[in-house]
Image 1 (cartoon, one colour):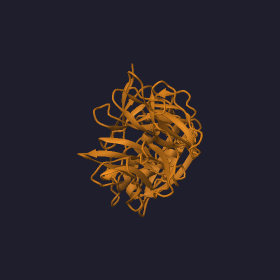
Image 2 (cartoon, rainbow, N blue to C red):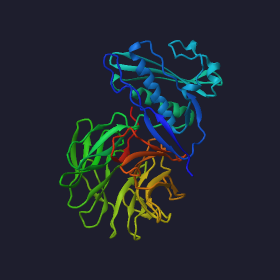
Image 3 (cartoon, rainbow, N blue to C red):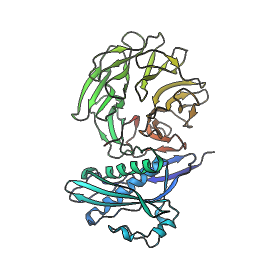
Image 4 (cartoon, helix red, strand yellow):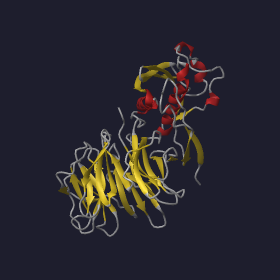
Length: 438
């Protein structure tokens, strides 16, 4: 029987700062399922500020850091009811920190932050202390636009994860996804935790399956805005969408190459579905597969040398891999069910995919990049689909209709924790995790 508990994750910090004032966000309920692996206990109290007008911002940025560290799966953030009795808040004076009292909470590390404003920027001066030695072990100053103070917390938390676990977190990243409104679906972008969600297409049609480019500046997607399923690329810097492919038949499943210079796509213009390469402007098309049963859903390996894809050539969907020029096509999945919608992890070690095994629903799996050790990550009623990896390869995000409507979930690949990302608009589907922002 599953262990189930409810965490409150505050997707916090100010969405805007006007005249030194900020509005705190509402708590985000994240439903955690399955066991929790051993984590590093860490304390993240509200941050200090010498500006009374920034008090809410300082506390909210601290909550962003705490939420990011919790989500990473590396840390357990201490609840405030175990803080030292004498603690009334940080000040700008580091000498006021009573390290022995914080050590008594059994936290291994303490996060300190000082928040202030310089012109149009919020500045965060952050420090990480080891509560065994009472020494500062990491420090960082972060400057961000005052309209997005929470980004300061995201940047620092990524580096805390890197310092204590070896690989930076993915807290500065964004996700793109599709949101249903009536009979239309539009593309949205949001912070990885669902905060700052905003619509970036307004086609008043069906726009789905977005994929964000490696530099985060472009989004490839499918839209029926011109009646048929065509592929487009949206430049986020200009807000302009240009056609990628408007061939007769199916145009679908875009996937960016790691350097952003090419996209692998699925077309049926020559009969059955096959995989092609094109430049982002639609030029220089190259056909990669030639199979009578159809091939689709390409995904590049992180080094760009391989492409995993789905084929029906054995009678039901299975995952195959080929060189990025179309050569050396071999089967990858042999776990006993159908397998489709593959996506390669950023570290190159795993492939996430969707599988439908007899007696089960559509579930999210991962396997080694060589096809070894297929492991089921989800175990629920309903349809779980559209997996996408976090930049640090710790999580897989996906959409699920297990509650009766499509929502965004994430699962920690190491611990098996499933999280309902309830800050996202609903119904939401087809999430695609983007790169870290700098």
